[in-house]
Image 1: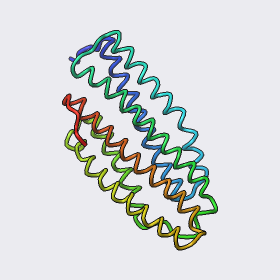
Image 2 (image 1 turned 90 degrees about the horizontal axis):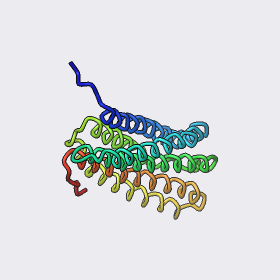
Image 3 (image 1 turned 45 degrees about the vertical axis):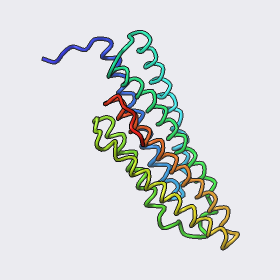
Length: 219
C-alpha cells in the first residue's frame, strides 16, 4: 500500500510538477523560436513572444512556493537541495525563454533581409545541438541521470566551437558585400543567443548534479 503523502510532501511534489510544466513550455518555445528563424515564419515568431508571460509566471510561482517551504518547514539535506535547485533551474529556464523571444524578435527583423545569401552550412548543426542539449539536460534532471547531466560540458564546448566558426564565416561575408551586413548581423545575434542558451543549459545540469550529490560540478 502506498504511503499517504502529507502536506509537506504534496508541496514538494507540486513544485516539481510546476517545474516540469515550465520545462516543457520552455523547450517548446525554443523549438518554435528556432523554427521561426529557419523558416522566416512571422506567425510562429509572434506565438513565441506571446508565450513568454506564462513561463515568467511559473518562474515566480516556483520561487515563491520554494521560499515559503524553506522558511516554514526548514527542510534539510536532499529536500533543501531540491528546493534550491528548483529555484535556480526555473531562473535558467526563464532566461532561456527570454533568449527564445530574442531569436523571435530578430527573426521578425530579418524579414526581407535574409534572402541575399544562403544560411551558413553549420547553422543547422548549431541549432540541432542546442535543442538536443536542452532536451537531454531536462530529461537528466527529472530522471536523476547524473551520467547524462555530466555530458553537458562536452556538448557546450562543441557549441562554443561552432559559434566561433560561424561568427568568423559571417564576418567574412560582411567584408565581401555591403548588402550582407544587415542580415549577417541579425544572424550573428541569433547564434550569440544560441551560444548563451547553451551556457544556461549547462547550469541546469550543474544544479541537477548538486541536487543529487551535494557537490557543484566544475564545468
